[in-house]
Image (cartoon, helix red, strand yellow):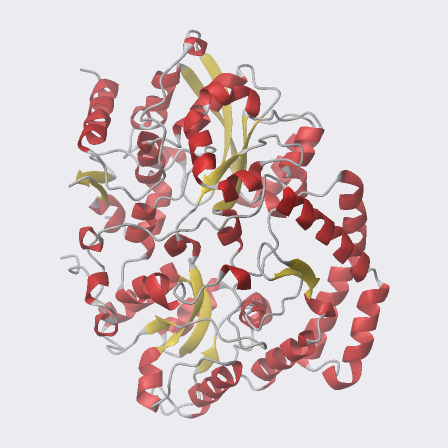
Length: 577
């Protein structure tokens, strides 16, 4: 029996006994080869190279165990364009400009890269619509049928399917980050968890002045982060620095700098900065600054991902220096209108920002479509999310559990970094799998509490602020870009000047808003509203599709029990030996 035969036999047995039902309702198991696989096909993909090289992976996880499985299954041979991570945008831009795209075009955040906008690439004749490959993408179409929000995002105004999306339909994975603070400091100072913005400022003042780490020095930093971290916290006032939805995805568009509450947003940020509640180097901030502040026991609060929260809690517990250290998630503050507002874009889309498109230059586009569709089967999701059974994961009672290569890496890599190094099929879709997220990012009581109730129990889709994944017509897009090129630069510059005290909010705010209008903000708002209305009409009314994960947490040993006394016992599983 060949390695491939053994691998597929194991996968078949897994399907027979049934896997834990936590994912999408798939139309079938493994994609069956068709007549298009008769001849060997060369397939081009591209991948970014950062810290870990493909050769380092192959030394531990043989090529034939993952990419080779696909090559034999579909009778293809992969060829990769390896691009340094820092050069990815430039390289992709050149590919688009020269019409030299790989067969499967991957953009990990096309919403931020206009040159990779699927609608524009389709209009330019560089990619196929997927509709003509419907015979080969049944599993993907089944996902779109089950989750209309995803279909709405990948469909053009003319009703054509333009790209493969990466579904993310779980609240627990959509809320990958949020506000958090030192709960042990609150308890020590006799403070309640802050709920309003004034309460947040009061906590910052106490963290700064009452020596919560008992060092005897003025060394604490109440809120650690970058300028962007401060802006994200201020967004939860209900007023952002850009276009946002009023009333959720089915509401209307507003522009933050034109709203009356934008002044209060600036005043809140100014108080944080000028009272010294944020680190002085917030304009030149790097992640290492926050890690150092956490390690020194001087960070009071931040706004970041749950994986970071786990890492800090585990490392501080293991160090023994601060045995009571506990970074804990807290509910989003109540905004100016008394509601909680959420800046979580993927909740509207039920998908990540990634897009996968079939290039017009692909020699056999139907086979490329068939390969992409494979990742929406259960077997494909196991391969791209968990890797190779027996090396990177084991199937235990129908649940894929990462091995010590990932969770206790011999080289000292974090679980997330080890997964990045050894797992995944670069350049192809990776639907979010809650079983993966649960092991890598929900490994302490703090992170589980965050996404299972603290952040998610209070979420309301009507208070979700990000603009949906809209597409503008060419002429509108050009006019919008022309306005925003100068307008957003002005807004960013003047806002930071008022926050830092280089300009006066009291004296200059009215003139600021007048200039914003003069520079075309109201016309840009009209164009964005038009695009959002087109999205709202596309494929019928918007349906909220996020759901809770149906998962048995007892399958997932935690890496720490720090904070277990504050959570429901059902969230807690035994700590890994």
